[in-house]
Length: 73
Image 1 (cartoon, rainbow, N blue to C red):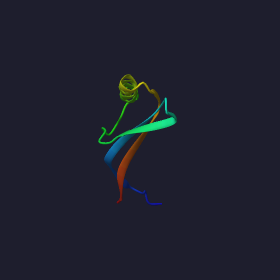
Image 2: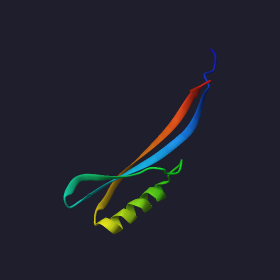
Image 3: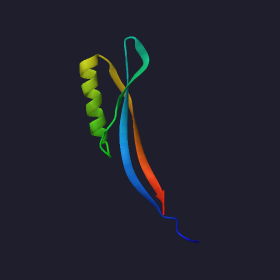
Image 4: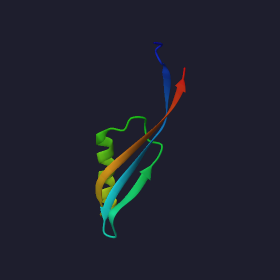
């Protein structure tokens, strides 16, 4: 059987931070585009901490979305 080779190329990464607080108990999303290809746990936690400090909300979780182009060779 012939080996299938695919070429992957990173295009973009985005992070969406979900926070809860007064008036949005079910969660409010804050989205950030143009993030680096790899986003570490420490970077996400740091971003959540900054948002908590300026908003009185609580950082609940983050969703990281990476888009890649995959070429069939």
